[in-house]
Image 1 (cartoon, rainbow, N blue to C red):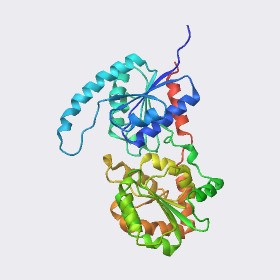
Image 2 (image 1 turned 120 degrees about the vertical axis):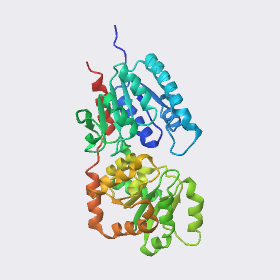
Image 3 (image 1 turned 90 degrees about the horizontal axis):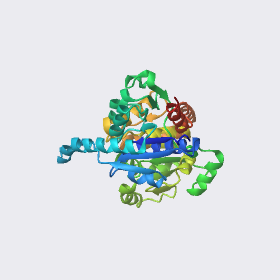
Image 4 (image 1 turned 180 degrees about the horizontal axis):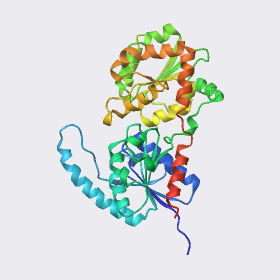
Length: 369
């Protein structure tokens, strides 16, 4: 009788910080065993329901949802959605027959991991942040292994289950001298000028954009060029802010398709502090100024940024201070080469290359008798 191909469920999502690492793990599993069967389980209406099929994988959506902070009648539906999601998870696990379940955080992880544990199916959790999310903390005692991106996570999880793997990222983002030349040509930038890269996410970041808009003239005075991803939501406002000035050294875009080239062109990077982004920035090895978003669960971006700032691996600027301090801090880094070098070296120390491959290895180990 032939041994069947491995069957693995990857559950969770909700945000890019959960979805893209999950896809990277699936890709790594496929590289190690092209015959592996992978099924994603996500939450209906969330990002994973679009991005996972685009990556070539099958996904099933659960009706599960979380409690919203504001008062709303939708919170009354949460327990009923959870019960329905648990029932559906039982059917999914029975029909698909996974050998291992991987939980990446987010609402959909909960029902699937709980059902898997009750059926004695090995579970691996992946935690992206330095401050563990609620779902993963609740599921930790049911997990066989917990792959983390930061040290000292034993305050949230059982120490004997923790494996330090880092967060899965796109390895093609790693810059090189040849790529820098290509990047400067791509963005039509001068090799004689320093470059600031501003990335605030696909929708943009209000405080970051305000910080740039209130100091546009300084870029001309300092002879510094900029790639400014303002986000779709703020593009019109940014265009209006630039209109009174002649700023040939600024490249304003609402979204950057070639992030590898944007990273390669940069001498200093201004960014939010999502876990996935920080893992990318560590591989990029450039000086970074982090502006944590205050609008995320449990303020985990501030915790992420603080963990780097405490190691002199990044500069932390609070969201409320960004309109006043952001550009000043960027210019300070550009003007002090030793400071820039120190930041680059320290953030490089936290890089974890091939994180997805390491997690995939741990998944396959759980299948061994």
